[in-house]
Length: 276
Ligand SMILES: Nc1ncnc2c1ncn2[C@@H]1O[C@H](COP(=O)(O)OP(=O)(O)OP(=O)(O)O)[C@@H](O)[C@H]1O
Ligand SMILES: Cc1ncsc1CCO
Ligand SMILES: [Mg+2]
Image 1 (cartoon, helix red, strand yellow):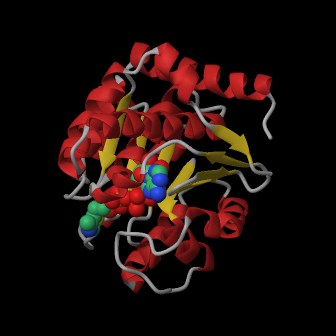
Image 2 (cartoon, helix red, strand yellow):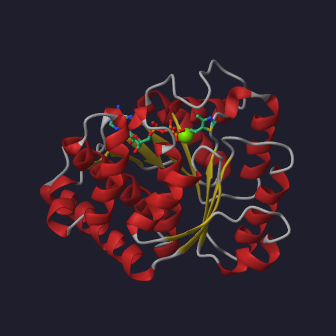
């Protein structure tokens, strides 16, 4: 059981990070899949960040040096997109800018798995996947999968996440009923969120974009920034569900709730525990 002072420390850290995102409005470049572009951009705007869906390889040398963080998501990967992702990731790493890899549906093909493994060589700050994606990446083998949705609980992926964190040097974040965040040693559980968020496509992709925004304002504390983004997004989902009739209206209310989050609500609702 977490002590009251540890809980308070997490909660005030989450609020401080959200406040910093709102104040600094970091520019987040997103090279994401076609399904998610709209929700990722609107999630970032509602949180106070500034999204830019710039993905052409010819624009990266001009644009990427100006960003504060990058999010790369392989959800609708084709061979012509991979060079852009690699160029942006390589430049971000070279310039010391944090970047997030979302290995969406990584095990749907050998091409996608190989692409993700090559992207991991370019040193993402955070790898954010669902349970199935992290397990598949960690064992680097093609496992059972339903595509973009997870067929594993996030908690089934703790060992896989720890081992991927240690082999890659990234913080690994596993979304699910309990979001797991680990640097290979510490394991943190984020217990915010609601089951219906799985019924809105691209909530996981949006979460990865939000993690990038939080890294932009606190890139020296990757674990804490990641945990904060996950808690904030989960709280927005909880508040949104209370107003929603189903996934369609949850999508709208989640964005509104994220936009309107206040200190009292954040401090009351943050639910983070240290699992090891
Ligand atoms: N059972 C659940 N209870 C509470 N929150 C959940 C549950 N399942 C998912 N979530 C939340 O939903 C969000 C999306 O997580 P999910 O694991 O569904 O992403 P994903 O599979 O990568 O989604 P997508 O690929 O569609 O973007 C996260 O904020 C996560 O915490
Ligand atoms: C449904 C879907 N298919 C490829 S990417 C994506 C969005 C959720 O990852
Ligand atoms: Mg996903």
